[in-house]
Amino acid sequence: MIILPAIDIIEQKPVRLYQGDYNKQEQVGNNILDLAKAFEKEGAQYLHMVDLDGAKKGEKCNQQPICEVAASLHIPVEVGGGIRSMEDVAYYLEHGVERVILGTAAIEDRTFLKQAIKRYQAHIAVGIDCRDGYVCGRGWLSESKLYYLTFAKEMQALGVKTIIVTDIAKDGTMMGPNLEMLKKLKESVSINVIASGGIKDITHIQALKELGIYGAITGKAMYAKTLSLPEALTLCKEE
Image (cartoon, rainbow, N blue to C red):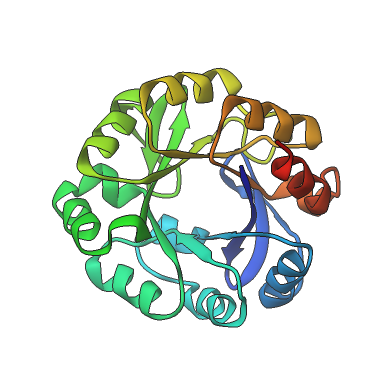
């Protein structure tokens, strides 16, 4: 299992939200690039970045610091938030980003999603952000009628290689990931599942590892220092 430290961005500042609420944001550092380099120095294998302004507005807003990070690090970077066109996808991939996450676009524009998968294949991931089991878009502000298991199976059928799954109710709470939801997902699809939301400490990393999850995204636990990245990485390497 890989660990992906998370950097969420609002107005070019690194922040954390509580349960996806833009009114409950906390700045977690002064400089995005310094944070990213610190994670790399600690041994991170991958970095997860989200343009929260972009997710809300439906367009790229914080691409400058994101691309600066992608160009400066030696580890791969994945990016989500406000990516709604082939031009957006191409922009990030041409500026050093390894994987682009489609969320709202995957829900609302299947033609675009299919084109992106056909052209960029494994460089495209899909974000499945859920509230009560139903997929949400537009910065988690819009709830669809798509059940997460049905949606995940559709994504696999379309050729998506990686999905990033977030239980919004768990995000930023450090109350533990939704293991039941993730277990059902693992039983339903065979593609890479990255779990996001709720991780607090090493016991949560252990639980995800035991489920056979491909990756775990952790943000708040890193900033609150309830989880040591080197310790989590060591655990993940153990057979």
